[in-house]
Image (tube, rainbow, N blue to C red; front, side, top):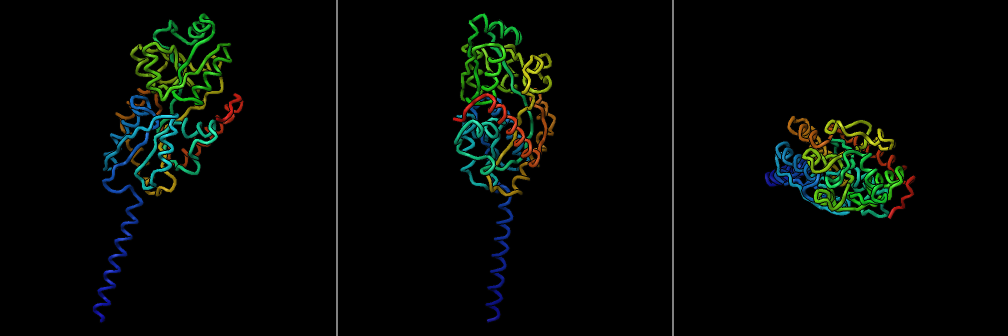
Length: 327
């Protein structure tokens, strides 16, 4: 009898140890389970290129496959909704810049997600600026040339933007108001198709991020004529800021960061954050991102959370002053 009782106790103890080990292991991404990085824009754009660079390096740091999954459309809204519905098990992360996380909730009545409730910040890794670029089909060599060219065409022209109700769209409105131009925003499903039309001279200008434009600018296929932010960009030292041109109020720069579904174990977030910190410290990654027009800057979870709130507050005021009504 005692032997049977002892045997049962041993089995119960072994079972308890197994459960404890399983629970402890679940705090991290499951071993050998692929990690997904959701991207809210099509392949070929700046965000996609950044995500694929990081995925290639993160797989070595995390010891598992890291897959980039494009969910383009609605300015990242579709990808954000996919993140919301994903299991909070440390296997799904969302790479996003300011538009999806900070701007969409301000311009849409029901975006289908609430960043404060549905997501948890993981870490940021870079800041960047938006820019105005003109196609090679226009004679404009600089911003003043572009304004003069539009005025010579009846002061009316279209400017491409990567998504509706975005920072680029508000910038288009401000430029038009400042210089007395009738500028029409032409929304695209991401920067890649917009740039495709710019390269084929289907649209004379576009507003997007510097990483979207930098390679074609360097190749002379389009020209960046002005950038946002408080200082000129290292990758574009000859291009003035909008503040230099008399358009103040756009000095706060957006960010790139990772987010996870709410409820993801903190240990999994810390593991991913630590791997990301190591990856962006690698010289080849830093050089690659610098050439793309990014300023590499690691932001731990708490700093990212603070930055996101501050950025949202800044743009809430700009959007309110513009008279834009949430759709």
